[in-house]
Length: 316
Image 1: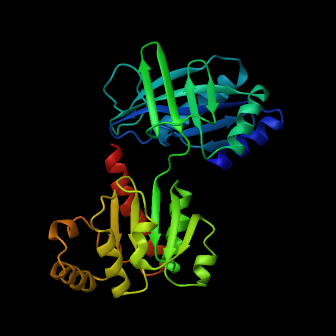
Image 2: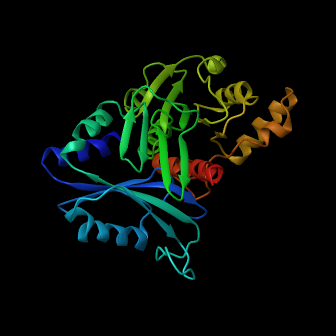
């Protein structure tokens, strides 16, 4: 999101006006999830998304034809994705609904946007009927907090709360997965037990890189139930060590790379060593959606697709 705010800051510095749209509430199969944001400027440039499709197109056209040409107070607009309702139809038929807030942006918002550029990884961003606010010192116990009634709305977003992906293994697939997951909003932590790996040195997407003995992995992966963990170490023995260390923890997602035969053999060995079969049944292995992936990036895409499936299922 830092690049998002930086671009808006550039537009405001040039004296342009813009309209910011934010999804403050989302239900069912709505393509725009809570927190999705989009901006339209006077040059009719677009940034971000509130879900796409005909609904987004219509609201962008509303900004161009009307909102960018006048002053207005923040307001919300309900969009229902069904064709058989008398009002608030979005034009989409995917079911579900979303509520979108509209905010004018001009040079008077430059200080706020500059703060978001400089401090965009912590603090709480607030959208309500008064305007947009940002408190660098505030925090929430969850990513979003919403109050929405007929005459009041307030969405608070904790910018420090990113889903965390622990990539255990510093090879080519780990590097590709780190890049892809970072680009969709994950905070990346990368671990390996080998020194001087060029792929670890190239990993500019990981906020933390650790080289350590895999038998001590629990000392480094300190979080738990809301985190995602991918095991893709150098081989069978190291994956076995890692899985035995981590299997008693409750993660949102725990997956291991390897062939069906390797997984079968490794799981049988762990059961012989006292690991519960029920625990092993919660591990995603072989990891990733089965799309006949071959290259490191293809494998990373299949893994990330499975992780997204788990993440979005939990958020519905």
